[in-house]
Image (cartoon, rainbow, N blue to C red):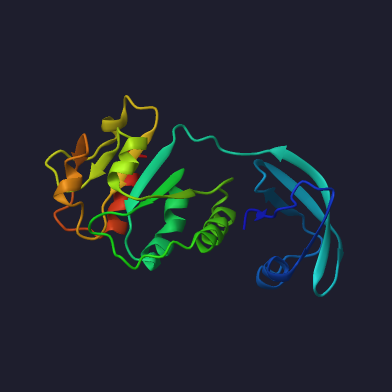
Length: 224
């Protein structure tokens, strides 16, 4: 655990209890003489160092010791559009996408998307917070929704679709772009009507049919 996200990070004195207390002192067995590092959602870039001033069986009072601006600036922004698949698949892959440095993830309603998909933003946020605290990423993915491929492409017309194609994905495809825009279909890929809307479609160097979650990881790793 590199740090803790806490809404009151930055205040001189803060009190922690409940789930976060249990996580720090019971699950992680944090010692009372060790500092606790905290980031606030209001200012991701500052890393606050706290010392434990007082502690009992249910609560702890932390006192601010110091803070530094501490973050790793990414070279370019990565925007990923992912056609909606089942929610459990999204939950499993979110920590990996977070560690790979995705900036914004759009969950898109596509023609082959599963109709019973439920977007649980609160749950996704908790998963991403835990991922960042473990990996040391100073922020975490922003998740949004788009009602169609066309809506997504209106925002990001230079998006490269990952689908079956003789042209294979490589980092060189993005060499003239400041940012990276990529779209992945659901299980079954993009509908032919959706394929027509992309300026460029690239395939992956694999002889096999990949799950959408596997294709995402493979594609992002390819261009990093």
